Amino acid sequence: MKMRKGYRFLALFVLLGHVACMENEMVAPEEIEDPDVYGTYFPGRGPNWQEKTARDLGWDETALAEAVQYAITNESDIPTDLRGYLESRFDGLPDQEILGPLKERGKASGMILHRGYIVAEWGDTSRTDVTFSVTKSFLATTIGLALDRGLIRSVDDLVAEYVDDGGYRSAHNAAITWRHTLQQTSEWEGTLWDKPDTADRREGRDRTLQAPGMFWEYNDVRVNRAALSAARVWGEALPDVLDREVMTPIGASRSWRWHGYRNSTVEIADQEVESVAGGGHWGGGMWINTRDMARLGLLYLRGGMWREDQILSAEFIDGARTPSELNPTYGFMWWLNTDGALWPSAPHESFAARGGGDNMIWIDPSHELVVVVRWIQRGTQDGLLQRILAAAE
Image 1: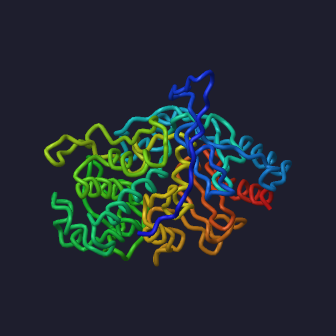
Image 2: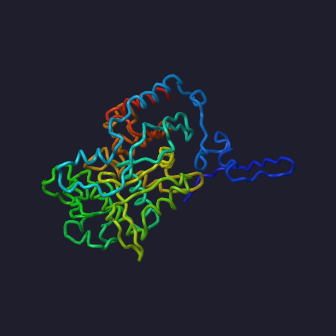
């Protein structure tokens, strides 16, 4: 696979013949390259991330400040006590016991990247926080990696060809493909971690199941089944896969955690492994800070490239951005702005990872933008994007 070439040099600072070599004081080589001369900018590890002023990037400073204030002013009204919030929503409903860990949510925070640089940042962007269904896009990434590595030959292969744990033995479930799984059209039927698929049939608990590939439904039981299936394909825990294959290469922090449930431990390759949750409907899921979310967004913006390395194939990202037949605003566990259906003010090719509390990683290839927003009021995302785009133009 052809890789882009980058250039770097090492600056050595010598004082009285002594080289300062304390690791926490050194500037990473990639941080001192001139991206305008030597190639596309990528941040260094951890907090090593260059900022540019609105003026540097040709933005309207006043409009940008107004956009940031809009995000802060429109903080989500979801209570900080997320466990209490979920339990109150599920009170009296069957099969809705919280099984995974939860924590109090943080305040509104966010970042705006332009061409990889930080152009705006607000709130505590280093706070590790619950992301709810943003987790699904991380899960899709691990399946994409399995496709890239040849662990799964084709997205249209039957999952049953790879996973033999009883979950796909029925005639109905045996027809499920990886594409169905990624597009949330699998109609998987069964019980996982004490949750029957009916517990999250949002289009009607007692509705008649359709054949796999014939009905779209947002269903966390099925997404959790996808996470277990992916772990069995990899032969290891998905957080280990994500850490090794993505998060470490892109320089993420060590603070993120991907949780399962108290009853989701299974044996894989003779090891006890926690099968993680694909969302946060019953707790668990991806807990991550705003800056690490922005790194994943930048990876997708760059077509899976990180400097010289192709971390995730452009082919899979193209698939993730392709509208499914049953829901044109949904790809491979990424939301799509097809025909402006989700964000009328935004480019139609923009796409996002989205979760409860209106947590979001929004990506706009046409303007080279990545926007991460945490805990914004539902229904205000388009207003925020409208203001950001006005500031950028």
